[in-house]
Amino acid sequence: MTRYRCPDCTGHWPVDSAIWRCPSCEGPLDLDFPAAPVPREHLGARGGSLWRYAEALPFTAPTCSLGEGRTPLVTLTHTVSAKVEFLMPTLSFKDRGAVMLAELARRLGARRVLADSSGNAGCAISAYCARAGLDCTVMVPEGTSPTKTEQIRAHGARLEVVPGDREATAEAARAAADQPGVFYASHVYNPYFLHGTKTYVYELWEDLGGTLPETLVLPVGNGTLLLGASLAVGELRAHGLIDTAPALVGVQAEAVAPLAAAHRAGAEDLIAPRGAAGDGAKVAAGIAVAPATVAEGIAVAAPPRARQILRAVRESGGRILTVPEDAVLAAQRDLARRGLFVEPTAAVCWAAAGTWTDRTAVVPLCGAGAKSDPAH
Image (cartoon, rainbow, N blue to C red; front, side, top):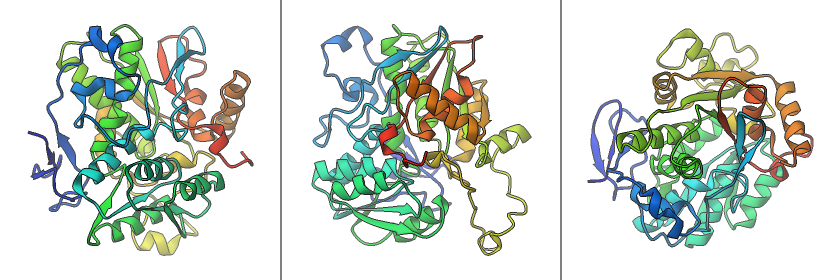
């Protein structure tokens, strides 16, 4: 039986309800879903999208698909390869999870879909809602790249710009999420999104002949790609489809690195920020403040699934790295000179792993450079 489950207080709820967080502790939900083994030997006869892994997905026969998935793997060095995730319908990896949320909203008969985003998730959810014929509103923080806000509007969604940072936008969305008839398409709280992003690893497993690299290097803001990767690795191991599991290495911008700080301290959850001078009112109100970084897609000061991210990284034998702003921009330029033009957020993993020679690794190029602020 597929049902929602709270990982903290262990309650269960039906998936045909419109809840978006645990009614008891208000934390993010997981999905109890009995994924079946994916038959690799039969995949060649299936369609070229993420839906080829039907046994591992909570939906079949989607009506709002745009052909997402099956992105190419490109060699960068003799040990590091890049999965070109920006070759998606909306030019970012967020399509993997957005199609799941739009399909769920359609099946639940939602009258209006609400999403909050630093840009790419909003673009993806607005596109798939357009495909599904769903009314959509997307909240974004002020300063979001104009190319992303233009794309959101082009898909027919209503755009609401929220004063403040990414966390202020999330707070505004959560405050509006329980209005009658609203489906909150939260790529952070709703676990269906993670069951979309996990197909990233299923594709690697297929393309690498039933194996995975020694290391998966993943950008971490809210952690949806890393947690999806962890889900997939767990399923592949449980079904005996891989012998060894890769280490999960998260990468954060040095300017906004709450998970890296917690990991270094050996903490199970985020460490309370200290002395955020200049943001006294927000700190007094308990609102985390994210400093500026060119990697806007991972500028998340208080990821709701922090405990899960930290646990997944530790259990895999991985770690969480940080990269400074100049290294992010240098990595972006380097990738462009290799023929791969990405936005700054998509360059953080290459900035961290570009010189690795002691292990095999794959980095995701999560968003196209055409979507970033021209100033970057």
